[in-house]
Image (cartoon, rainbow, N blue to C red; front, side, top):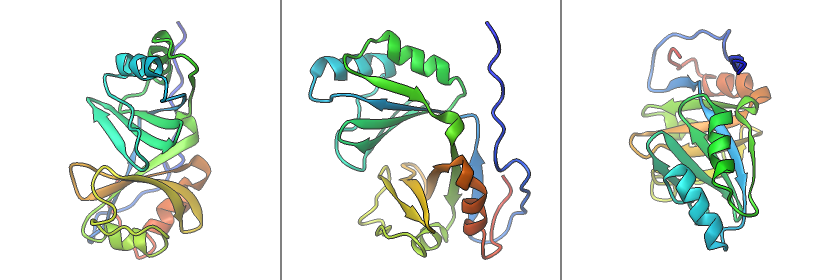
Length: 190
């Protein structure tokens, strides 16, 4: 079998130094698979559970995690599945092998960049140009939302085990997002 070529990061040429109360890190080597299906069908839900080892989140703006997989609710019949290791074809094949009835899936790994934002200034920085209420009372750990961030379409996920966020943007917005986040010169090495 031919080896899958390594994806080149749109942020590969950027270099930053550590400082301040905001840290940025690009998350690389991830697999992202978009899944669409009919959650009202129990056989669909069981097949996905069998393939992933985790139930699909069915409530708006929620996520579910098991091992190295996180599943994000995107809409009433759509999810984004994140694997912490490269191998989109393997993750997609696991889903296809489970034969979930009526499902559609696609590896979207090469179309997205993921930036981790953490530190005491993370919420404040994101809230500066985001229409979503990011206060912990309204946006607790594990919450995920699709929104606009500094004029860019983005998905924000509050990390469940630490104070920080992962920001998912189209690859074409990765550099713009990184530069906007570091606009005050307070960034950390990747």
